[in-house]
Image (cartoon, rainbow, N blue to C red; front, top):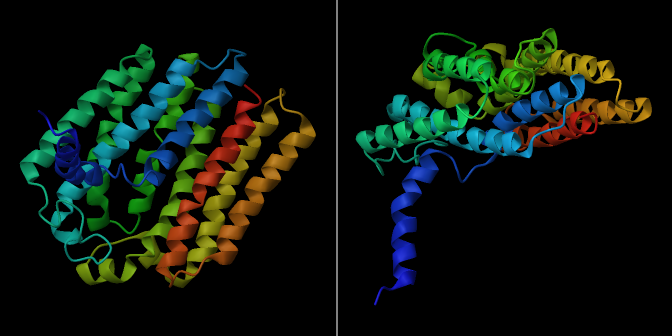
Length: 297
């Protein structure tokens, strides 16, 4: 007779390195990837007066989980030897040799196949733009070796969904989707600069680059500018939507602004725990902005 308890235990133990490699145990990454997709989808819904399709919302959510996992797998594959020398990342599956490189590549391939199967559920324009995302996904992990601004390339990569959400609803590219995309890129540069301050000592020692190292004591000023660009883009879109009650619009935008200012005020670039906490708080921004656009949809 099969011992189900032992069977489930064995499955959990054997699968643990894979879900750790894909960061399935740390959902903040996929949430920050997901929000621009849903923002764009909701905004587009309002502009063309077409209801949100729950099926596509679910596809965006699952796609965000899978593609974030694929990105983490690829990043860890390329950074294995660097991660082994950094305190925060030394226990990652590849860095700690809990999983072989070949198994990691097979796992990466499986995730990409699942991501592609999700992508082909959308219209042709969305599929085409989605396929092109493989370019920034591939090169992003290498950027910390050659530029002080890998956070810019993360922003370009991580917010591709701001284009896909729009095209999935409208089957075209609009100035509004581009405004949202640019705003999201600056949002990511801001919160990932905060995140990068956790590793700046190790990164500097290893010869790796980041906006956190480059900006150093000027980080608060720079992040304020990044967040301001993001806030302007969100405000422009929300104020353009005629279906939102003015007072509710201003209240929600005020909440977003207060949250962003609070991040800057509380930020201590030399305290990794504070940096991590502020970084994770951006999920709240994601929810608030989604609510803003959802009520207009």
